[in-house]
Amino acid sequence: MGTKSIIFFLLCSFFLHLAVTQEVAKSESEALGESEKRETLEIIIGGGGSPAPSPSSPACPPPPPKPLSRLEKARGVLLKFKSQIEDPNCYTKNWNENTDTCDFKGIRCATYPVDKQKAVAGLDLNGARVRGQNGCPLPLTGILDGIEELTFFHVNSNNFTGGVPQKIIDFKYFFELDLSNNNVTGTFPLEALKSNLLVFLDIRFNRLTGPIPSQLFKNDLDVIFVNNNKFSSCLPQNFGSTPARYLTFAHNQLTGPIPRSVGFAPNLTEVLFLGNNFDGCLPFEIGYLKKAVVFDVSQNSITGPIPLSFGCLKSIQYLNLAHNKFYGVVPDNLCQIPSLRNNGNLSLADNYFKEIGPSCWSLIKSNVLDVSKNCIPGLPNQRSPQECHDFYYKTKKPCPNPESFYYVPCKSYWGTHSTDPQATATPSEPVTYKTLKPHRLRL
Image (cartoon, rainbow, N blue to C red):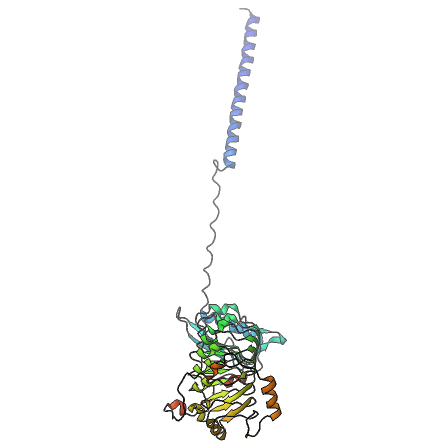
């Protein structure tokens, strides 16, 4: 082999080695680059490389505050109420942070039956005369509905306004509501009647309007005082369903006849209808009221004769039919009732009666019976003959079912002497007549 051939062979070998070396290097570089990419991707998605640092654990929240006790909740309500009122008589003077809640004036505390916690059981602001600040209204909302443990709420003679809060229907032990002599407005507070345990309702001397609801006589109330408002329309026919003993409807704008069902009210002891616009004739069923001590329909436009059944009102001590348009003969059996004869009071003044029986004459002499300003011959202080004539021949109106006025569902007292000590006892002062003054009642 010649020298040139050897040189050519060496050069070819060199270039072939160089090409192979570069290809290997390129393949390794690519392989290395792919590996870097893969590692980078794994790091990005958290599957390779160094582990990501774990987030720090959150701090534990503080424990919730201890729930306020029933007494603490009530205290907050009372202090907030005090901050919103003007108290000219300093009634709430000791309602402050230095006085125990149960020592606040007018506050009564007791153990709440559900969980045996001490709670505010009653609020008595009678006569406090508190009012809203700077002439602002003083709503019942915020005080009456703020203490669910209340058993009574007495606020006679203040300046509360608005209506009764809906929330009181949820009070489990609410027995007495006295809103008398305030500025409560609207229609009859039906919210109060939804409290099933309510036995005492006093809303007299306010500005309530509209009809008396029939629901009032379905509730198990013992006392119903709604006098001196602006209630109107007729009394509901279910009046006799009420178990109440003391009822006052005086000085409203009620109309229509006295419902016949009144005579079936089982416990009715005293009832005042005076000072309204009642008309029509008295139903004979009133004679069934065996427990009635006070019955007053004076100052109305009621007419007709007195039913003979009134002689069966064996417990009656105060019977007032004055200032109406009654006529006819005063039943003698009425004047024979022992409870009337023993210092009772029978007022028939300012009507159109034209005759009385012998038993009634004796009651006039004993100042039990007042028949002034009638049409009775031979008695002083009577209407003029012309006035009586005009009434009987021009004004007098007949009554439906005239035969019912002669029905007597009891034995006559004529010629008998009662042995019932209650019938001969000196009459006590009636409860219901006290309601005709706006002040607080003490029953």
